[in-house]
Image (cartoon, rainbow, N blue to C red; front, side, top):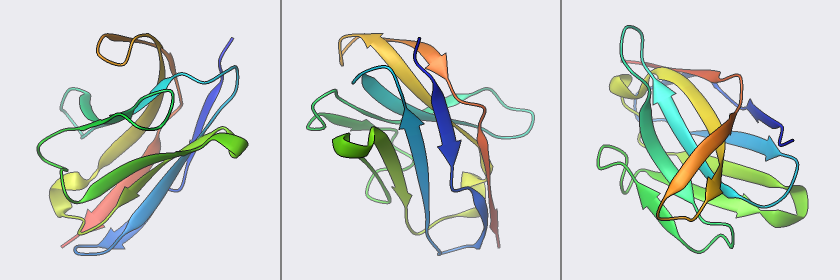
Length: 118
């Protein structure tokens, strides 16, 4: 069983930065971040391959967000820069089975709130 726990959310002004952390037990898997704004569906943000080399980002966060892994700590990070009010959401970390190109997200964290004020 894989356990996923996020941390690092908070309140930040527009243009600021935050780093989210995701501790995942149970092995090295493809990891991803999703987010869900109030009244909207959950959307993909970024994902990272098992070896930490392959990455994929939603167009809305490209060049602003970076996903990376510290394998020694079994932790995946989402560095968020140049934050905008529209980045406000609950951010969820997920661990996937399957390949990087066809991930199946089976394990989810509880979510962490990110609020960007204008």
